[in-house]
Length: 88
Image (cartoon, rainbow, N blue to C red):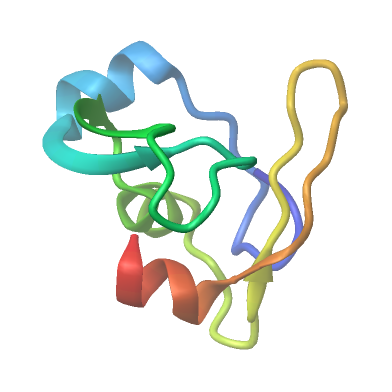
């Protein structure tokens, strides 16, 4: 994790999962699903809360968004931190 953090950090998935793994029921919907469409389901998801990862990374107070970068260097759009803290 780099950018607006106290110090760049690399986090190990196995260690994070052992420290703070959470299971939630979430709605999963296909991106092309129309309103009321059948391409959605309630699924049980186990993962690590982003807020916990942000805490480990010591994000600076002036940071306002996060960009996720995949192993293949694919990047998505910026996601506002307020959205993650309120809904994530």
